[in-house]
Length: 137
Image (cartoon, rainbow, N blue to C red; front, side):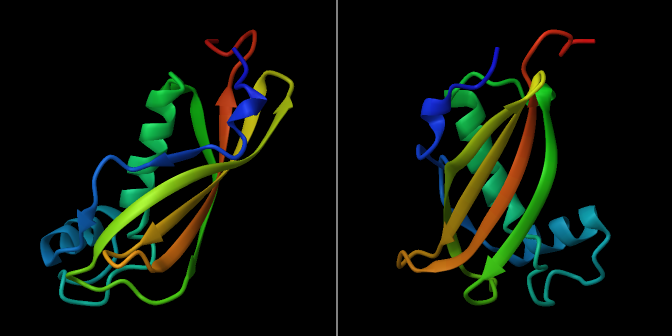
């Protein structure tokens, strides 16, 4: 079933803040093959951890199956670098939606903020959702 156009403009917060720890940074760096030991600067793609939590909140709220999603694009724009000790929160906003054939092309923006509410970075993603006939094939 196609995603409803009324989603454009809706916000979906991640369920909980995330504290950036050396252990989390080290595990993330190892998982993505980034050199370092968790004491180096936080990898620039680390915010995907929190952005994914917000995306999962969106998918759960709208009952969209993750197995029908292809991650089409991701980018981050930074106000400042992330640092160990930051407590971060994310809110995903659906910023665009169009249908092409049996697919929904969903544009999202995830605003990552610190404990004071200041924006640290913004992630933009394009999600491709298989929605129509033949999606299970």
